Amino acid sequence: MQIRCTHCHKPFALNKDAVHAALDSITAEDLGHYNAHCPHCGRTNRVSRRELQRSAPDWRPKPPAVEAPPHHPLSKRRHPKKPTKSSIINPNPCFKITFSRPRRRCNLL
Image (cartoon, rainbow, N blue to C red; front, side, top):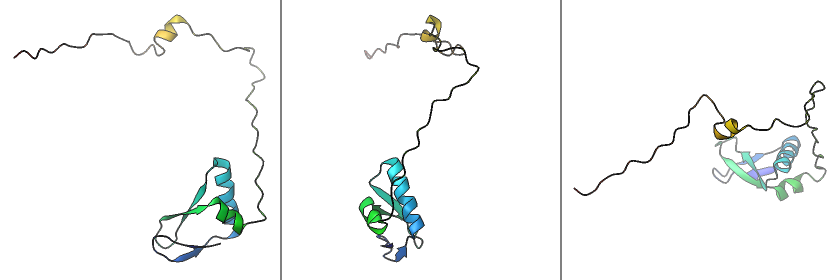
């Protein structure tokens, strides 16, 4: 795929592997464009999803991998521990919570 840099106006190419990797990344992140870096000036160029798909008609999106929640075979507890009153009021016992009134300033002078 040939791209002309929008900043330095020099052409550069993306090979099929780079186009497929770009399509995989923008599909996984649900983006509308890919940032292609110019090898001459180093700045990014926006390449739309439509342009990438036009240059790689044989590309097919990979099905998303489904991850199962981690299950430890030795865990006996089915429900999470209920929070106690002290953990709700002060979740970190290392820090003491103090409440003070704001200072009043007198502007009579």
